[in-house]
View (cartoon, rainbow, N blue to C red):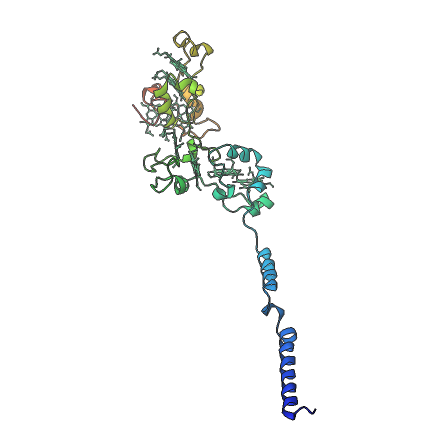
Length: 244
Ligand code: HEC
Ligand code: HEC
Ligand code: HEC
Ligand code: HEC
Ligand code: HEC
Ligand code: HEC
Ligand code: HEC
Ligand code: HEC
């Protein structure tokens, strides 16, 4: 049987169209028009080429193990180092490039601890204008273990008021033992063995004199400041910002 002319032409036309489509699909048009895989591969390459900013806590641990251990045992254990010190990958791979910043201003801590009624019950919060206003938080709270300062319970049990007053004062971080030598017997029969008390201006001068070393304490000129009176005639030693 003879195939009619018009069918042959139609067949050739269809074959031509099919060839053109196949040519377009597999030769002319790029493969990534038809599959996501090349896009994904290219994106991975692009992202990998970007500089890394955060190193992550395990990296910090390699060189700052002591701080890592302190922090892991305290109230800030779930916070990353770089939450506070900023992205520090460059520092971690080469400390000589510079030190990360130390966020030591009060305002930094407000972000999480300034009173906000929407925070969950029991989350430790403070009223910034009232809680030791004007003093740096890190004076009393170690940022790596922020547990509030308190006198050793072995003193506060009997000298509660003094301990509480001191804990909220400028001398919060000065230990009782810096000013009082306490005999063992004082704990069992307190009146029979009294602790020592500072003897003179020099005992305060070890931290406040102009030649005092290694202390964050403000300096005064021992020779002239407060005449020759005992320091505690004017400053209550357990809250020295109160002058009496
Ligand atoms: C390869 C070791 C190394 C790694 C890893 C490392 N550090 Fe350090 N870091 C140092 C050295 C060394 C210093 C400088 C110490 C100095 O100045 O006394 C320093 C200083 C710092 C300081 C500033 C100290 C200051 O007194 O100003 C901070 C903050 C700090 N590092 C945080 C981090 C954090 C966060 C990480 C993790 C992202 C980290 N470091 C990873 C070695 C390292
Ligand atoms: C809640 C915020 C916070 C977190 C979390 C934190 N730091 Fe700090 N860090 C500080 C502040 C504030 C200082 C400054 C302390 C000062 O001046 O006394 C500091 C000081 C430092 C210093 C200087 C030396 C020193 O002992 O004071 C290093 C080093 C350091 N941090 C490393 C780390 C590492 C490593 C981690 C994670 C394991 C970390 N920090 C987590 C806030 C933080
Ligand atoms: C002079 C020492 C001192 C300074 C400075 C200080 N605090 Fe405190 N903080 C304490 C003491 C002591 C407590 C224990 C409770 C009390 O007496 O209010 C405490 C309690 C807290 C608590 C509650 C802890 C809990 O377990 O409920 C938080 C949160 C806190 N402080 C954060 C801060 C922040 C943030 C700053 C800085 C804006 C700061 N503190 C400055 C001494 C201080
Ligand atoms: C990114 C949020 C964040 C920042 C910033 C932050 N903290 Fe905290 N802080 C926390 C969390 C979370 C806890 C644990 C709360 C809990 O135990 O429920 C905590 C706990 C505390 C506690 C109670 C600790 C205890 O052991 O009872 C104190 C005090 C404290 N922080 C002080 C500070 C100080 C001072 C700063 C500034 C240097 C600071 N925080 C910065 C999130 C933060
Ligand atoms: C078991 C209770 C008790 C404990 C614990 C205790 N004290 Fe006392 N302390 C007393 C009593 C009681 C006195 C005498 C008060 C008086 O005579 O008015 C006293 C007196 C003192 C005095 C005054 C001495 C004087 O000459 O006036 C100092 C300073 C003192 N204690 C410091 C401390 C310190 C620091 C600690 C902690 C290491 C401590 N005490 C622990 C009960 C105690
Ligand atoms: C900065 C030094 C200093 C520190 C720290 C200190 N004291 Fe005193 N303390 C003194 C001085 C000075 C006196 C004598 C004050 C006077 O004679 O007016 C005194 C007196 C006392 C007295 C006799 C009663 C009184 O109020 O005069 C007691 C009790 C006492 N201190 C307990 C403590 C305890 C407990 C601590 C720790 C929580 C402590 N002190 C920390 C300097 C200090
Ligand atoms: C072991 C060191 C040490 C000794 C001893 C000491 N101080 Fe201080 N004192 C400090 C430090 C640290 C500060 C600063 C605290 C701050 O700025 O938050 C301070 C702060 C003060 C201030 C400033 C208060 C303010 O905020 O304006 C006075 C006043 C003061 N002390 C008086 C005394 C007197 C009086 C004595 C002796 C009875 C004494 N100090 C003994 C360490 C000491
Ligand atoms: C006659 C009273 C008097 C005597 C005694 C006295 N002071 Fe003061 N002191 C003051 C007054 C008032 C201020 C606050 C005004 C000022 O800064 O001069 C002050 C301030 C201070 C400050 C804070 C300085 C600053 O820069 O913030 C310190 C620290 C201090 N005294 C320590 C001492 C010491 C240590 C002694 C004993 C050697 C002493 N004072 C004796 C009255 C006295």
